[in-house]
Amino acid sequence: MKKLWKNYSYAIILVILTLVTSIIIKINIPSDDQYMTITVMKGETLWEIAQKYEDQHGLSKVQFIKWVEKHNGVTGDHIVAGNDLVLPIVNEPLKMDEVRELASN
Image (cartoon, rainbow, N blue to C red; front, side, top):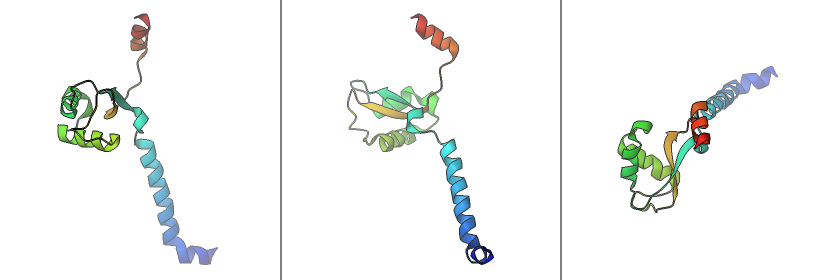
């Protein structure tokens, strides 16, 4: 066992640190199902969508559009009405007051 540790201690430590780092990253990065999804309306562009939600995403319009294009496999000039797009806006669970309001409607 000492011989194994002596020969491979750096590799073992590197593997352990990599695993720990991967776990920490996985825990802290929301998955796509935690992001807001919208349905594209007729005539809408990614630029308009970026403007509409600019107070919720904290990105520049260009950064927002690049993120949406990358995560949805689209380009800015090829979005179609009726398509669903994932946006870089983290969904927040509804508060009980919001649930009651929605239920009463």
